[in-house]
Length: 226
Ligand code: SAH
Ligand code: DHB
Ligand code: MG
Image (cartoon, rainbow, N blue to C red):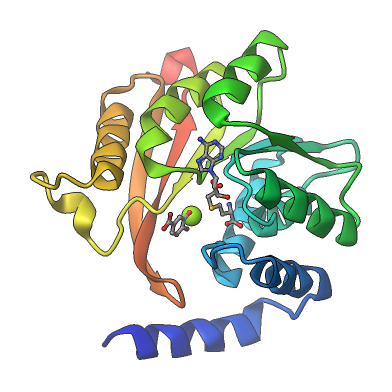
């Protein structure tokens, strides 16, 4: 029961539940043509992000790690009129491709790609009073996750949903002895979630067209819920 099966099932489920979409397909094609790594969320995961944002009634969304804007398109499409998405991207070329893909999807007025390392742009957002965001999606470099969680909490309110991609990594996350900085970053992130009284969190393992991985989901609690 491995990759071929997971891909076939993902294909079946997406054929049924995730309609073909010109802008999303163009975004993936343009990203690949520009030489970007093919590590966007899968279509089923993209739709999950869209549905979580819809269910959350999110009017403001923050994404950390844009790549070519594929997940940003899914998230921005969940916004009501007047809503906004800010997505942070360190790589100038990735940011350019993402801006072009978001424009093609008709989302230029809704979604802003902010260039620069998130370690610098997150404090800028706090200083500018840009929060609180209703949903925050963490998907940039994995060693940065602990720091991104700290800033996400600064930019949140009770009820904010925080989602983090790629927290399982072929199961490597369970290897306490790993020297891999990716694994260590994710483990510290999970430990922070566990210790943080301001959130309640879980994490779910996933298989599919992108292999074996998982995501963490946290909700910021009201004082009375802690
Ligand atoms: N969310 C995207 C995939 C993001 S891939 C999607 O699913 O469609 C991770 C991205 O994070 C890459 O584009 C990488 O350049 C960016 N990144 C890596 N380190 C970063 C940092 N310190 N600050 C901001 N972005 C970073
Ligand atoms: C990588 C990053 C991601 O965000 C992802 O979804 C898959 C892989 C990576 O850096 O390898
Ligand atoms: Mg990811």
